[in-house]
Length: 342
Image (cartoon, rainbow, N blue to C red; front, side, top):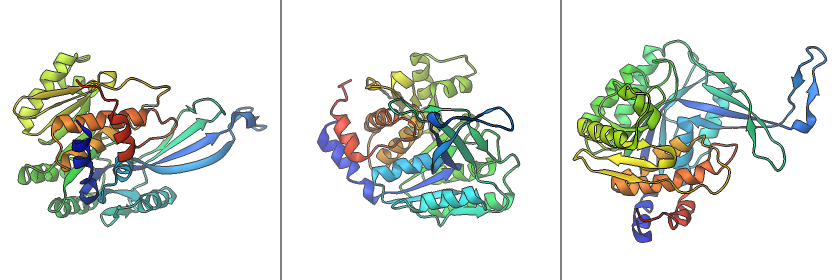
């Protein structure tokens, strides 16, 4: 992709209206100074002294962070948080972002806020080291009344959206935002709006999902196919089959082997990953790909162009250590110049 085409695509970002449907959580980082380690008098265990606490939206919020960094004009999250302190922090973090509207983000007393507690050893001159997380999740089914409220929001927003992103982050089915009932609604919307980009991603895998644009990684694809793993050729064939079945593009991320994308007519594009430029942290890389693919497609990019932009974004993100990073359009433009002709 040349610079003129890149500019033509990204110049449309500020006019886009994108909807993010999924499990928004709070990423709460506890930065620990190892020089201040103590031993508990009561238990004899080591004490990690936290010298800084920072919080930011995670899960589907990581995708939203990337959309904000790209300068998307209107971003509407559809999801929920609990009526608790973590929910207050999450809403505060979301509302502080430019272009974000919380009109369809629900605070519910029947849910707790999905939270990742991330202790980090921060030693000057060294990459941060993450310790065992402390997570807080919901373990009961999402109430039907809340699901119905979210479904109505999705129906309303789809009429004027330029693209939808659906992210299932929870591990236990039907305990988060993307329940089976909500998926049925999204499937109906996909059938009604066949040209609307709707990109789906799930930690549980996308088996049984309605015909949307799937974004999956090699490990998740292997599970879908009932195999131990998949080769590049097998990923190529599976993406072709899924795209033809769904009548929408399908994307497979392949770590150091890049990203491939297939369209319904059988064409497959494969873009290799950029070389590493130092230490990496892969947290958030997949979400950056999801955000950049959807935004580029909504702005008129073809599948190969969208993959090229997403490859560069993921390269920028993985080199941001100790955080779930993002990539801005100027950063993308700078690194795009190094993308080899493939």
